[in-house]
Image 1: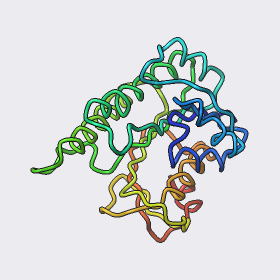
Image 2: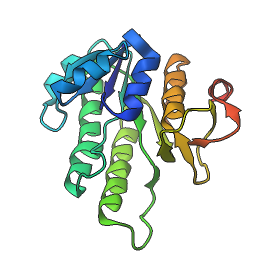
Image 3: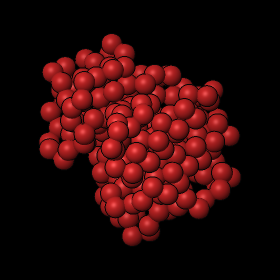
Length: 213
């Protein structure tokens, strides 16, 4: 397998790359992040998704078995970068996947996407949810075998391997370890294809859940 991970230096992406090893290719904006990606056993490619054109990205993903969109503007970024990264970079990666003939696309979104922000929501958080919602909507219009994964509140606690993965889940948290493990299991089982799944900690082993998807 060859899996291209957008946002390759992110905390979920690095965990996913460690699980996939040589099958993974992490895209990073900063050349200084290359050693961190390579330390997982994955390859790294420098590509700034806010500046790259679709032709450049198409050549990077050509021949891949799947694309995982794990990029995000991150804490401290303003509303403008929520749009250019969380929405714009996802659209760019999906455009490139279509052009390159890569059908499997996994998008890491967020619980709360697809719904109007609650009254009084912080402006930047509202922009984040809007960007994620529009990225999801764009992906659903495409002829790709897409899966949208909406994790709950992310933590850095050790993964338990026990989750709830369903079209709708109650509010909750989930370790980044477990998010990465779910995505790796989806990719390995070919358990992707036009579904939106919410993800929080639960009481079912990941392997058992993926087998029923």
